[in-house]
Length: 126
Image 1 (cartoon, helix red, strand yellow):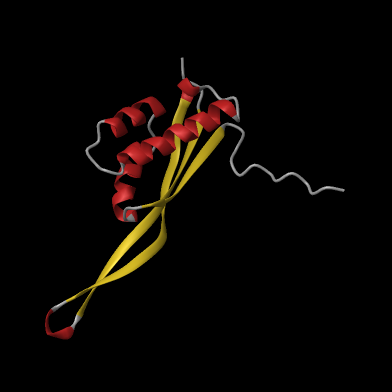
Image 2: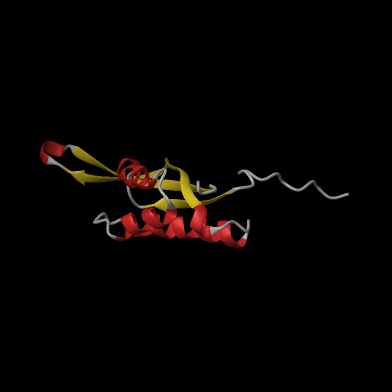
């Protein structure tokens, strides 16, 4: 009498990877997510490799993880993968402060973000 197996959260031709607690704002991270959305994975990896943004290395690691999940867990062909979806969400926000003039307090917020990348296998047109 065991529990039923959880259904897959993605389709049979998809795989995904999630990265949590990235020390950057969601707004900055969304610029990189928009950069790779809809591209072939090889092109997306090249774009992230040569990007000058600090968080591009973490996004590249997440994309490589999604590719590895597709290859090892779901037996998908790496050469036919595209970045189907890449979305960004908010995570916690650390609140810090700094004393300002006339006894006031300057609030400093240090946001964290999370990134989810979904890759899909598409058959190439001949």
